[in-house]
Length: 140
Image 1 (cartoon, rainbow, N blue to C red):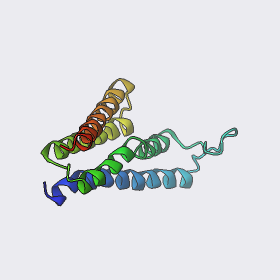
Image 2: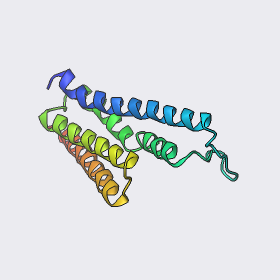
Image 3: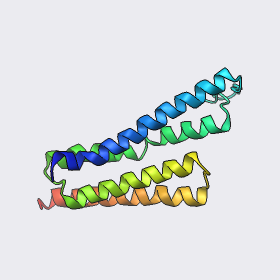
């Protein structure tokens, strides 16, 4: 596979992260200007953001959980020359699950739809890591 083909899903995931970052900043700034922020006691991280600002913020922060394993795997696959068509296909499937999860999370936020999207992404990523590990360990 070519380097651009391997990195395209990474760029898409990074685009999602930056989109959510700027959206989060915008919703937070609007909430502050509107006087809607109500700091709560008990937790230094609980600033009392309005629901939508908190929803987008939570979605943004989730991009630094499971996707970090994806961001770690890609350079390893490139360096070891294990990034083939299967790897790139699974990368796109993983990133698609992250986009769909973000849409549900920042939209209707129905857990019955959001969790299966999250779980699907975790399973795809686990398969990617398992295939990579087997190929490395078996020198395949």
